[in-house]
Image (cartoon, rainbow, N blue to C red):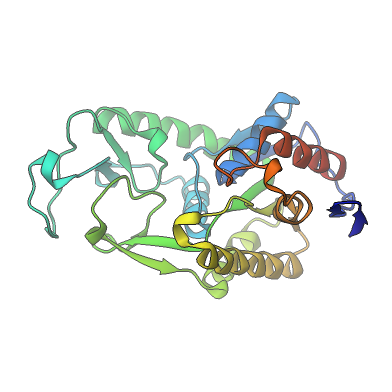
Length: 284
């Protein structure tokens, strides 16, 4: 790490093996992964980017790889309404085991494994779209040499009745979920198995620099620390894993708020371009 006036530069050494245009790439994770994925697509790289939509936590990203690798399609049992507001939907407040609510008009249907962008007007439309995307992404996963993974948070929500960690709560009432903080071991146990299962693929891990303010600033820091420790374990344990320091470039090198968007949380377009240029010179 070298210092310049009013700026501490995070050094990123060039990798011995570079990502080439003929090597398939699959990108999974937070909206930061979407930004880099879009840049790669613009440069002509063959990339499949976030086939389940934006995902934030390591457990949900691992679930998506299970779907891609094992070919399990989404079925009617996976479909849930987006927004089960008890007043609008005509339900009473409180848990109703075994009850499958109807989506209020206009909210549509989705699954707990997808981002809200996958919402469709009917369960049939959702399943058609989700499984079409899954089939294309499964093919891309099998062909991909590089898997880009961006972890955003260690905080997760577990759906109590289904006993699954969800990718998105989809406006369901709080009583349906239990909020949990993944441990380093929770993450590494799951991802050790994934990396071991695919020794022919290279995994590029990044940690999103976007602060999750709803967790509180201290809670966000604890969350990011867990992610960084988990990634450090993976990169130390497996030769086909790599770390790109997007988190450090944004929060240590470009730490002034002038490098952020108006919400003071997301990186500005200029910041994304800087990170992209560092990625391109060291990885591509």
